[in-house]
Image (cartoon, rainbow, N blue to C red; front, side):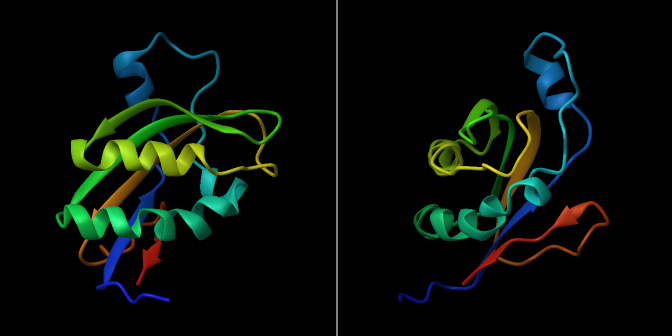
Length: 130
């Protein structure tokens, strides 16, 4: 297994639906902010899937997204904002995951690409990859 330079991919869950409200009509239900609790695959696999992208881009950034989990567990990204260099790889990584344990709903997720883990905030779950 290759050892990557140390960096962090932190996923911060946010409870507000400002991302969805900024670009889309009002959703019928608010975005949920507990996708990592509902879909452990995101927390376990996303850092590994995005490690090479962080190494190639080699700068800090973040991607905010609104995503939908279907009844069959398929994940679809509905909206994506953030650092352009990370958006495509983040979309592909997230949409390649299955979340059969997550309820079929809309969620919000922010993925941060940083050289160090930020101080842990109360509503933040950290994802680190080496």
